[in-house]
Length: 52
Image 1 (cartoon, rainbow, N blue to C red):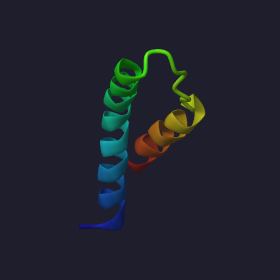
Image 2: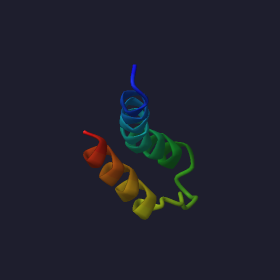
Image 3: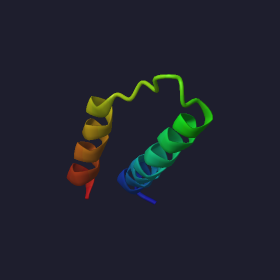
Image 4: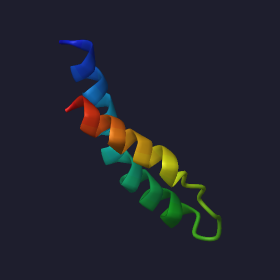
């Protein structure tokens, strides 16, 4: 498997996991603020688009 395919799969996994993880954290800790760095998520999406 070429390295870019592996990286692309890893990025896909992270982007799929993030919304589920954020939802779970908010359910478990409704009173706490969950720090979400939307810039980092946007960078991952941008990298994902460039690799494909």
